[in-house]
Length: 123
Image 1 (spheres, rainbow, N blue to C red):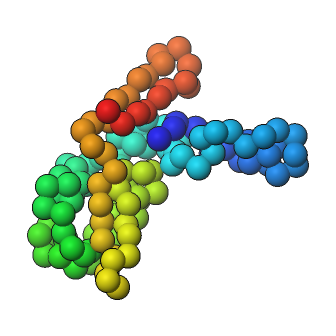
Image 2: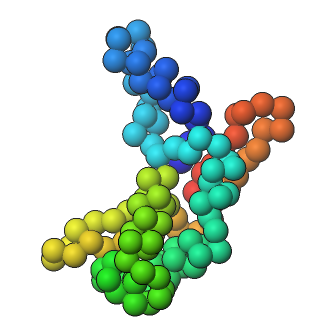
């Protein structure tokens, strides 16, 4: 996962599209605009969802809905946001959408107090 402002990501993509530079090696890596955005996403409810997905490995989103007690639209919205930043992956298996955790242990956040060069990595 990388931390990159939306403006920076757009400028990078436009430069690549114009042929001014090569696509960076981490171009396909999910990103967040700031550590604040990541922190707001990792609410107690979403952390609980991630724990359930990791430990109980539900066979579908419907199964996760029953485990978590969260309603479908709310649950799917949360899952989509978590997937967008790379914290989980939703795959199709036997016609079902199955959520799987991508984080093995922890997220390590390095904050640059003098600039916006923060880093996030999976540990």
